[in-house]
Image (cartoon, rainbow, N blue to C red):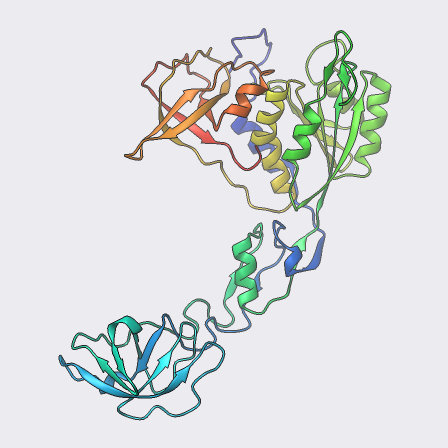
Length: 414
């Protein structure tokens, strides 16, 4: 498609085509390492993990109550059993359950071999060593069977999964203390531009503070990444080229912001062409059209725009999926769903837009979204106040209040 907002000689690359190119170009890092389970949160599993045991390992009670054998139940009538002892969690009942007997049992405690039923403690009446069961007592209930959750030898977790806290709990329940994971990605990032001023210094005329590196540091906060902030590089072509080449020798991926457009001081694409290869440059996306993706040697390179909102959008939509693939994790499509837009939205056809929105839900569960305000790629305040993107397709010519739109809730990156 042709971007209606610019004079492009060639059609711009759609975001879907860009992601397809990334999928074809990016190969996961091959190296792995073994780590203790406590250090595996958020890391990418490199090989499947099989359970060495049944989970549960023993038949156990699903609630506090009394364990008994169904043969002792008087059909349709109340009945009484003698209390023979207690099975505690971690301290099983040691005797043999005889006919006409039951035991007190607690959640998670081992159920004696002779018992096949557990009744909730609130449903019986205890009088000393005699337990009275009601006529509607149900049998063969409330017992967790051996291997009910996971059978011995079954796959607990398959690769390549990014391990969650629940995954760590599942692995621990099988007695697994370490796992083999993909090594951390080595990622460097820096900003380019003579106008950038470090935090803590006063602003001179024409200067701005560098917000992009602060954002990238947060966006790259991931246990699978080892990240280095390389600071700010001035608009000096030779210095930029030297910096790119040096970084490419030490990192798996390099991310820059600024210098990817078409101005006289925008050198990123030219340097990438001279020192490596350009896979694509310029996307049919707003904000964030001037984005360069390629390689220098074995290092993947992402040249993001300079405007801060464009940095966030292009990182989430392009860089994050690429890094996820590079780390060995599965590709995951962003969650999107329909909502009623309560604001009129302006848009010109030609690029897929990611407008900032404020998402809400009424008591009936219906979703509504309103514009978060100004949509300029330099307006970080509306991004801070929003909770989602309103995703408008390339051919869209605007939205009237009351129309249905597609929304994409902000992920944990924001």
